[in-house]
Image (cartoon, rainbow, N blue to C red; front, side):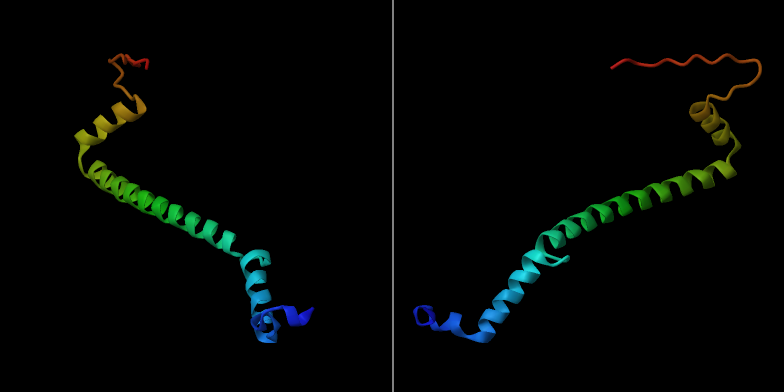
Length: 97
């Protein structure tokens, strides 16, 4: 029966290498499927990192403007937190989609 196999499949090193490749590719904890999933997740996490870094710089810029400009601070407090002076009334208009 061993004589019916092609000579490459009778080679000990080829069979051992093939078994090693199959083990690494499909059965190991770091198999190819897991590697592709992790690289896709890494790409999405890097995109999120970029997004949050842009948001951080935007917030830092807004913070710097708010600490230096009193009028802008008052406008921000009125728009974001609905703060008002004692003599004023606030009307919030919500648009329905």
